[in-house]
Image (tube, rainbow, N blue to C red; front, side, top):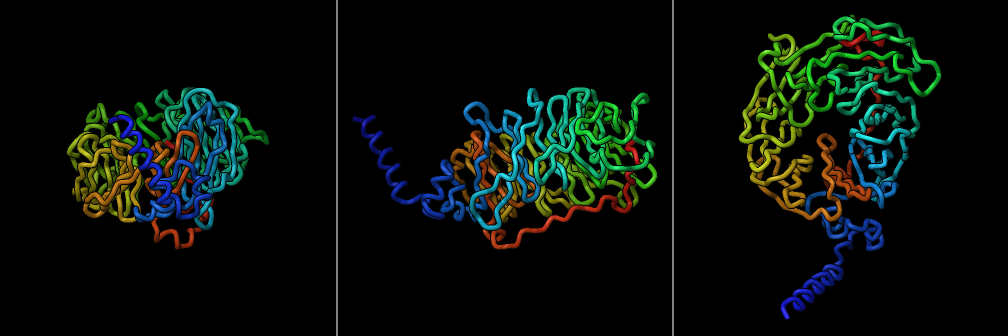
Length: 447
């Protein structure tokens, strides 16, 4: 009798959920389209209990019977998704909550092998394959240019200023012009740490595929690349097994900075996650358990200098995530902790084990070890609630957008925003001018 009674109880519970209308908000038919969102935090009627509103939900068009989503990244109001088949899709948020719009879809020609998360700039979406990089138009998805890397890539290509940087497994960084078909003068090469035999080719002619030598420079990374490179002040910052390196552009030359200044004191320095640029500083987490804020050319200091460093109570598993004046770090079995950006002092520690994926609506949001989305008070670390995520089992880190994006392996993507934000006007993104004062001009070459 016991098994039969258990089956009956489960059947009654399912019926109660249906009759209770877990998908009432927004209408049954609307949430029927949402499918597995029903009953989860992405359900319109459940999101409100978490202090959130469902901005949009969308289905990415790819063959989900044969492939799964590989990467989901956010850049302002644009969400960029790459599936296992190599296809790339851009989703735009609607003006009012509803269905998201797949603005464009593109299948790059070279889809085999390792791929890295796409990255976006004001004009391009960069797709990095195992031995190639492709630049797509951000608005339309059209191929602007593509290029072989000449070696295995070690991370995602990123744009900073007029240049695209591609980390390589050889301990070098390939630098390409973001606009290879534009005009420009030769730039100074001082300080770039270039290979002696590395050619600087002429400006590209009107063709999409760029030959190997055209306007390419290969920069010495000064160690094994550890994580993605990040734009910083018109230049670039990246981590290696020997420390942090920054390329700073000036009107006449590029200047290379290192932290620590001498590699002898940093024979091994592994980083967890990607360096985060916040204001005039760079926040990093080391694998041996240190959170630090590194600044460039601070008062009374030249080059890179540690404004502060804080030992972590356990080895970090991800981070840092920065929200206003707070830094969040995931600490494996020790839970998570929050620190002050100003001085690195610890603000709170939580025993909720998981990965911090977002900070918004006065909460730090953790995908906990059971797969649920748990909210911690951003000021105190007190647990404020926990919600089921339904089919949205792929963790998506949305560190700087003020929203929570979740995805399912089959291509369902949903965006949740704070209730207060939903009533605000969407910010207008203005592309920066081509040449910002105080940075190296279009003819400058990195150190």
